[in-house]
Length: 315
Image (cartoon, rainbow, N blue to C red; front, side, top):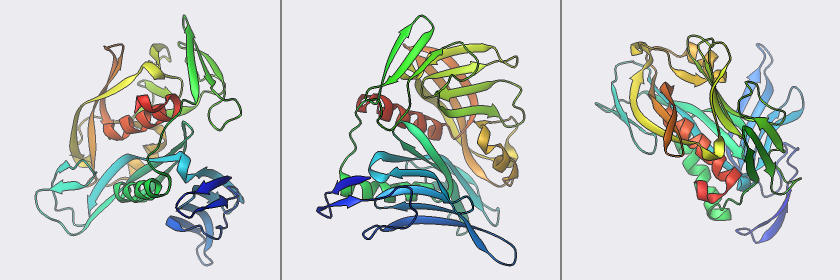
């Protein structure tokens, strides 16, 4: 990767596949996972620098994610809070993702998930401490170095009946490949990239929702397509949201399928936001999802993917 660094006033060359930092590369955030009981070894390393974001698997010796910082957006997809004493009552969450309690506790842990979106694709998702603060830091560095982001369309969309075609504006440029898909086929087409697969926390058999870079569709328990609309036409509206303690939940929540394991391990004193989301198309409600885990995180993720894919007018 070669680019002009406006702030440094020089041309920079970075090998995205090499975990070794370049001369002027500065670490903004790093997480290192170790394995081994007696002799610790580095298993995985997640790093955000002033030039790139990468996730390096030391055991396999390969990058699982590597994107330029200038082309990436961080999205806080899940925010959670837990007090080590358990003696707190969360009454709200501020606009910047900070907890609001009925008094000022000193032992509250703020953690959650942050997604890396680049070229209209969700490249990775990390579990981090204080995700809103991390995003604020990285966004500030990006603005200082590269200015405000301007999104040019990466794909164009056409439709004939139920057949949807999504093709790149500039073939060969990073991003999704060309896809031709029947809106009502229950499985993903070749090249169709999943953004989210939402399931119920207690059972995956009660219906599944897919959000891809092409469409939004829901499956019944029998795996029949109940509704399907192009992503470009979909608008997500958060109808309600409230802070909830896991131990007080009476109904299952809808969440991304990759969160099922760690959600099951969360203590009953963990707080998060739960709410309802309406999916609109052409001014009509196509679907309504109840008890979505962090609905604003879901909406922000989809809006970011759309802005990168279809241009700034979708921000």
